[in-house]
Structure formats: structure tokens, C-alpha cells
Image 1 (cartoon, rainbow, N blue to C red):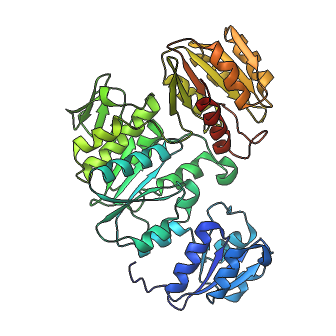
Image 2: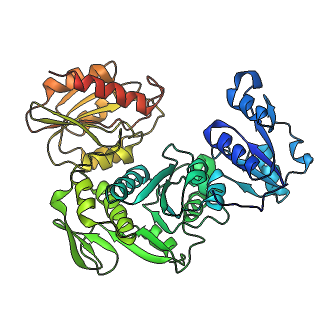
Length: 450
């Protein structure tokens, strides 16, 4: 950990615990700051708060005192999920007290450079691919951020010869001031998290934070097929590396039906890639570009691309059963994600879909339902999804009680050469606590098929 001294003897409020809050509080304490932690959970129900108190950190639990900032705090480090409409956060902003997330702290203490990946879709797949390819290529990669590992905790242990591959949400990036990754990636921009950001422009500006502080010594990899991203890329001061899946280009990285090109020259045969889908091709192009820029061996990259079956619950190949290929895309909690999954396949599809009913339309899926030969629907939207599928001309439809039940109906509905795809287009909360649990139930049921 770099000996960062600017926080020594400063009063810092850590707002919200969870993993990131605990790690930030401990590191700030080590850096000599006077740390106070505030969390809504009662103290006697919070082992994390109890542990921090034992280390000499002031803890205020069970409430958020509205006059808390009157104690003279010079910095607030907040949990990314706490919105800026929160009274304490809004008060800090009005008082011109800096508000960070732990990503900013991670950057300030890290001896290792960062690869920062953000975007509306594809962050986790791109992050995982980069980490796997760098690791396979002998690079000392670490993985962190929104993917589940607290960035400042990773940065605390990182050495100069490491590289921290970091998935970044818009929530995290809003709380950065000087964060400057060596390589930044913006996969795409779509409407998302508007309940948090208020407007699409606010959301996009937060995402632009991944490259905002870059200069000519850094690289910005971006989606050249999306005009909104190209517009933001024009404002970046980093070396621009566009990626395009729409054919050969002379700049950056691109792909046609057979080949991946680097700076306009053939670089890699697409036939080696195991992961299906146009959206995944975009993720692959961004990941390969990042690995080229840090000098990763091409053969090592190809080894990963030939075997990478997807991130768990994201168009994840589960198994082949009696000539059918079965995929788990439980992370597809909206129509856009399910559309991308359906577009990834040309073979006939048995689609398993449904879940929490938010009243949203499924019409966005209509153009890609042509090769769906059967639908097994479940959850609150089960009946609505079946009615939609019938309106699209799908001949075989049935309503199942749950995901496990759906697998038992999908298997006999399918034929050799078909794809069986769980891609719900709905959130899981009507029947399952998370999309991960829903996906795990699906995988377990699939593995029991005999």
C-alpha cells in the first residue's frame, strides 16, 4: 500500500458499512484519519461495527443523525448504493465536503495501475475475460470492484508489478475525483439506474468518469458502434482505441464474420471463440484490446477464448444433453438482456422466461422470437409471457410452477440440435431472492437430466 499521507489527522465519515465500508474504514484508520462510521443497522446486530469499535474507530449505529456533519468532517466516504438524495450526503454536498466511494481511496493508495471497465451491459464478462487472459499470460493480475471484491482491499495488498482489473458501476464512479486508470473501457450506454441518477445524461456522465482524468499516457477503449459512446469518447484525453463488431476498420480492434483485426490487420481467427453472441463479441474485442495493450501473449489469450463459456448466470453454457445445448442466462432481468441472448443463437430455442411482474411490455423481444420454437413460462408474468409468445407465432407454450419445473417441461419439448435457454426477461424476486439463486436452481435441475 502506498503511503498516502493527505488524510492523516483528518476527520472522515464512512457512511454505510457492508464489505466496502468496513475495508474503507480500516484503511482510513491505518492512514491516520480520525474515522467515524455510521450505519443504520443496530450495533448489537452488526459484528462489523463491533470489530471496528475494537480497533479504536468511532461507531454510530441504528440511526443517521441529521446533525452528524456538524462534527466537522472533512471527507465522506459512502457506500455506492446510498443515493445523493440521502439527507447526510446532500448535506455534505451543500457544505462542499468531498464525497467519495472506496474506488477513489483504492486509487490513491494503490501501487499498481488499474484497468477500469464500465458500461450498461457486459462489464462482468469483459472484466472476467481480461483477468483470465492476463493470468493465463503470466501477468500478475488482480480482480476487484463491482464484481464482488472490494477495490480498496485489493489495492492495499497490490504491488507495483500487479495490475488491478476493476469492474466499475456508475454509482462507484460518481464518487471519484482523481481516479485515473491506465486503461479504461466503456462497453456501451443504455437507459439504466435512472431512479438513482434522475436522467440519462447524469447516468452517462457518471460512466464517463472512467476516462475523465486520463491523459496521453493512458488508453480509452470504447464502443465505436454506438454513437452516444463515440460522442463521449471525443471528450476523452486518453489514447482512443475504438472497437467495432460491424466489420474491419483501420483503427483499434474490429471483427467481421471470420476474423478479428488489430489496427486493420488480421490478428485472430473468430472460429476459436467459444462464447456465443454479438454482445459477447463486443466484450471479447474490448478485452482483447486491453490485453494487447499490456503485452499479453496472443496464444495465451486464444487459449482462454477457446474455453471460456461465460460468466455464471450470463449466457453461461451449462451442459450438452442428448444433443441439446443448455444455457443459463438468469442475469437477464430485462427484455434488452434477453434480446441479446436470443440474438446469440441461430438454432431453434426453447426459451424459459418469466418472473416478477413490473407491468413492463415484452414487445421489445418480438423481432428475435422467430427461432423460438417453444416457451416455458413461470412466475408472476408466466401467463402474460405465454400470451405474448403465442402472438409471436410460437406453437409450443406451457406455464410451469417455477424454474425447476420449467426444466422438466423444456426437456421433452426440445429436439436434438436445439438450444434450451433460461433468459427470464424479468427480475427473480417473486420466487427467488436473487437471480443467482434462480440460476443455481436451474443449473441443479439441468444437471439432474438423464
